[in-house]
Image 1: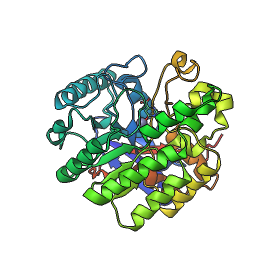
Image 2: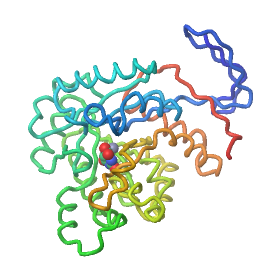
Image 3: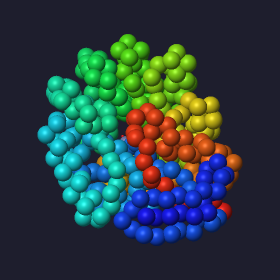
Image 4: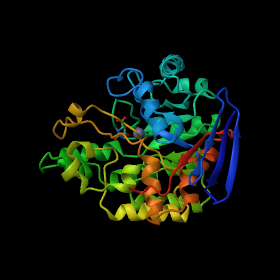
Length: 367
Ligand code: DOR
Ligand code: ZN
């Protein structure tokens, strides 16, 4: 058994915890705060096929360092996770990699929606946490850019009572922006080519599909005030719509292109600083539900390539909780809000069972 003595929970009460374990230890947690471990509903751990960027050995270590014991992994791997056979193979690889490093990371997988494999969706029910729809292209080539397939996915998901998580960027508008672009091919062009209208057009469409079919909709990496307004209106109508921003959209903005160069290139792109404020306000208002790291590593060499070649995505699972606690230290978030974003809402939305995963943090250590 592991005993944790003298910890303070996030409500300020002193608590003692007795956790069933093969290990026998007593931890004096005086001065430390006990938080539920982070649930990260959005990671790209790259297995199978892109393990040179990341795998579950390295990803799990990063997760634990970030106070995270549960992750949901995305299907844009090589090959993508869009059949039940590929799903089974992926789980076997993950289990093997986690065993190798001895980290019992809890995980679930999203199933990739692909127009040629829609018949696989009912078979995946019960084996995945939801269906991921890329409405715009990102890393890999999973995309659903035709209305017929989109309708089919939302309808099927509603019938099967499966949640749909969307990468809400409109592929047609992205292609139109690229075709008409006459400016320099520099990293910051990314925020123009995939501007806010690219995101809102897709968010509007996804919400309309939810309204039509009743599908539970989880909107990934919400990045702008305009998306928030659409999501707020949908929630006010009572639609089952949930919103997740990333740490990079909460803490970075377009000024980061100057310092981070290609490492600041992500989909959806970084926005002007005003949107960070809108995201924090939306947390306070309860329009935002969770936070997902969108942990999407690439190699340094890949990220050093010029705009056009440099892939989108940045890592973040290690830093998500520390950044939120930093925001708490600056009075931008209450501890209640941090816990709600990092575990409570995700547990509710994805109907996860209660389990005893905790993280001890030192709130005084703000250096
Ligand atoms: O920036 C991103 N990187 N956005 C995504 O949607 C995918 C991700 C990746 O897998 O690299
Ligand atoms: Zn992602």
